[in-house]
Length: 539
View 1 (spheres, rainbow, N blue to C red):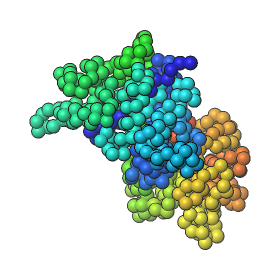
View 2 (cartoon, helix red, strand yellow):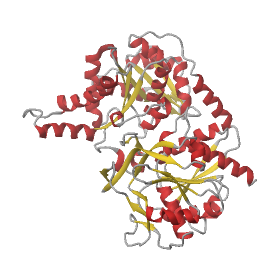
View 3 (spheres, one colour):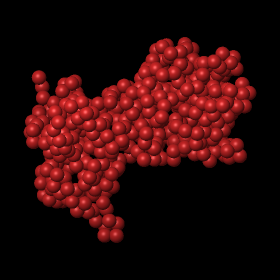
View 4 (cartoon, rainbow, N blue to C red):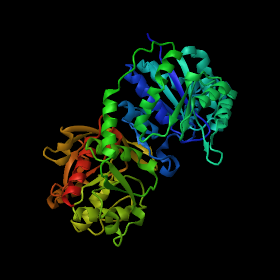
């Protein structure tokens, strides 16, 4: 049996340098060479998963096909590599400790004292190697969240130290640091990188490769200096300079031979340089689209933070590329949207997307946006809560149920057009049941959604607690809102559509999770196309 190679990606100096993008780029380059690759993210925080975290704390909560609420970096892994991740690809300190404590309670440790070393570190190591042992991957890339020097990261660094010692050439550490530019002095400073590496070395880990994040070109002299003071050979110091798009990063890393260096250090033949033809064609198309006049799409939501809607923004960008137009996403805060200012906020938008979310805050603004979109026939896409808001707005203003609502907001309302879900393959979370992961959906032939997918049977990922109330289904359809996507097992309404409008579709599921660089999601491609046509028609 072949031996799995393990690559660890750590970060220093500052957070948010792009470890996930570097890990994804390494994975993409190795995948292009024919290797079977997967990536996992280990987060040092003590939450069991990011499902209960405020988006302002940790950005978007990504959902895997098997229903795990995961870190947003898993979205990067899937978009870059075109793979599907699972619960095993994302681990937190909370899950590590819970697993160890559960074992202790069962008596698995035979009364021994439980300690960070070896019990916590052994559990981390077991999970590092789990995917490689189970699925026989050629490479398992493990990104360690946080920054070297954080107290929470120490058990992970100790685990890496042990694994590098145990696995020899089958384990390698890539350390990402930041090289700041001091404008007053006109100099790039390597001292923060030296300190970061020293901190990593103090934990017993010598980085094999350094990736230097920078806004300015790093000369050969700077790289030699870093190599000398950090005990790394010159060819193993590469720069990650600002790029027009994150999808350029694999090519920038390939130009500097990062993948070749990894293969050499791990005792593998380098061979020829992959052409990455489809990836380059995507980038060519992206750059051409970026030069066009942008179409403006309003993203109506309550989280004024880019990372809170990361997958949606990326899916819109990809859809724009494949429609040969640049998409400019304009965030519209639904909390501040009123009947008095909605015209000003949305009048110049080619399309409107009503974003997902939880809780009552900002809901009224979404209703106002939907009324405007429906009555002005603007292409509109509602996702998860956005679809539920579509149903409520339609009930209030078309079916004339002025009190239409959902149980989440008002249990006394007689017209609960969005009802609490029956417990299916759900889990307990956030004080209630959550429907998570991939479910089947059958689309009605002839519908716009069916035309976009080009197939009747689809499978998409969910993250919700409430569902369309089927008691009102006949009334909706008679009034013009068709329920054109149904889960075959539960009869749950998955997709609604108003066929008389240009493009007005709501999905209970999250299609953005399935959109990748080389396979953009068909609903987003169709939505952006409709937005372009709407813009052209209203010139």
